[in-house]
Image 1 (spheres, rainbow, N blue to C red):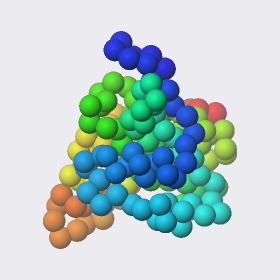
Image 2: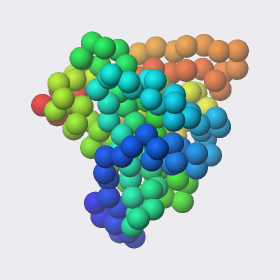
Image 3: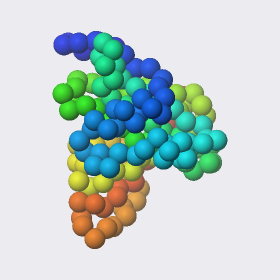
Image 4: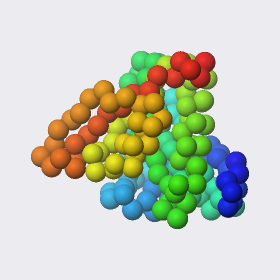
Length: 155
């Protein structure tokens, strides 16, 4: 894919790739270890996408069939290195993931974010996600917000 300033690619990746990139995302205060990824995705349909600029991994998106219902796919973790944000990489990762999700028979994408991650929340709403649940916490910035997007337009 091309941007006005550089070219980036998106490829399927490994858990190790996702962990490597996640450890460089400042908003992920306690990035998950390889074992957490393995336990969440073991035996489940999943997809790991990595964005590259030249040979450098600059972003990732990971999702899996958390609900075991074949209808709802959970887009779990993702992020873009700060220097590479606002260049279309996150949107391209999401589009590639949603295409794969629809091709694999899922009808919806579900994601969860925190109230303090307003950039993620705004991006999700701009991309046709709807808030379906709010999980209160002691601190309002830590409220969990569950969003859902129907993929019937991709079929």
